Length: 156
Length: 403
Ligand code: SF4
View: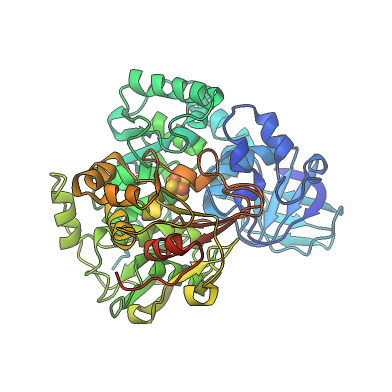
């Protein structure tokens, strides 16, 4: 499973409150989450996320279990998130909604193309292919299905 | 020779396993999305509603009609599906599950990051998101990667006014906010056994602030007696030699009252260094420090005096509230000029009551002080109950004295 997008560089320890603030959670309208994604970090970021690959520092998505954080990124058009490490609930949530997450420590240049192949296990931020640990067979199957909902629909 | 996680999950660290979930729970926040995902999966029925809990705690009672409508739908579903349902006012999900429901050796999954709290019982307890939970509703199972374990070895005894929360902030600051990502924590050593269940719950509650999957204690006589109070029989777990990826030694007698300064839980300073900083609001409660022992400690310090700033006290559960009423603790809290909220999360998540204003400072007994969490451009300092009580009386950060 391959993908590509332009890099958006973010620092370490981006918590889920920063991705989508608690005040926007009481709704089922996913567009609201996409509109307000990263609002408390940088209010000008949301419109730039369409077609982007987020390249962040370690511990991306720490904090709460709110799946709205991963959904907000996907709804806003994020293609994938790359970080040296992820908070584990965010990582599972991303897989479960079909948002590719890649564990790699990349030097990030804003706007530069980032290409990846989840099945083969590499990512390239314009400086050559870097090998990454491939997702487990099960996780790959879930992302390829588009998330755990379609995965179970088929499996049942 | 296995760690507690390996023993409960039945495989060595690093392996992926499929496990039946003994207890699963959601709250009003994550439950709405769980229900939506569950329905989209083409719901063929709940695997076992007697093991599935729906607990309203995050915004209770509802703050507006949007929230009320979402809650109404989830309440109807939970009741008509014969799930274990706790309505607004029953208490915080983690607390409710700790009142005689979770048992040693169980696999427990909550749709909330602080589900690690229940590792205090020697259960493998961890948090997931809504869609993972929907699959558990449907199948009764989920997958785990068996974690490696970091041991926190405790020696010595807490001195002066230091309490379990100060110890928790100590280990979080030593490990850092991602120091235990993908790993489990085991609290061991000669001083682990003497800790009360309430103290163990505090320590396990903050495990996720280091990125850990769960924090665990071995079930022992303390666990047994605590659960016997709820009429439940528990099995003890004997520790066996095993290999930890890392060990952190903490001598409890070195622990001093601490404050986590915004916006990071792992950035702590002795209360002494921040003394005199004015606060606008003090909040005592949450799944960290809203238990009866916390309210009683707070009341002992403020009894017969008046708080100098607005102070909100929220019991973690109805049982906690009832006990505080019965013993007169609540009367002391109210007489000191504090407000008392509906059992639940209260101001912790900044979604309804107790939201702070721009530039305001809240001293809270919670577990998170992230930017804007309790209100846009407000700042959250985290402390123990004793520090919160001493500071409420002065209106500024104040060192606690031995109660
Ligand atoms: S009290 Fe706070 S940290 Fe605990 S479950 Fe509620 S919102 Fe989360």
